[in-house]
Length: 115
Length: 111
Image (tube, rainbow over all chains, first blue to last red; front, side, top):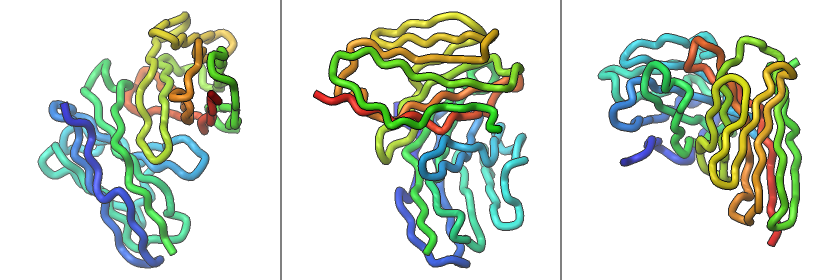
């Protein structure tokens, strides 16, 4: 069974530029999560999707971040414009719904560097 | 104060040692407790998953939860160099889905 796929793995951009990250979850997982992990810290949830619906986006900085999961499968997270403080690893995770919410499977992440 | 506190280490032990990793938390609503292992430049990998208080064993790994003390532990027996990684504790309440992570403990097992 394929795991969570993310691309790109690495991205270096200048500040104020836009950037997008893509995630394809494990087949059959209805719930998709985007986390941000700063250096030396644990991941922090940005947004959670149940199928196409964003059910928790309370931690997403909506002035510059946006996300979509149009067909309830893969998802894109966008930052526009990027700031220096956005440098981090962006992790995508997926899980089955219900009691399996807490058994989340993570992708390898996209390491973003903003110069 | 963070909801979940974890000693960042780094922790260095010789091969074969017993390793104890710990987290404390402040939110009494947490019911689900996880331990993830994260190798350098990889995503976190779920190691152990427990519900409420008690112990759970899986091979060389044992997870303990003491809700009365708001304290969880992960023990690694007969540690191996391949166990060298960052270990993250994570917790959630009955709402499900939103994991709160500790900052991770970096472990190095020396041959």
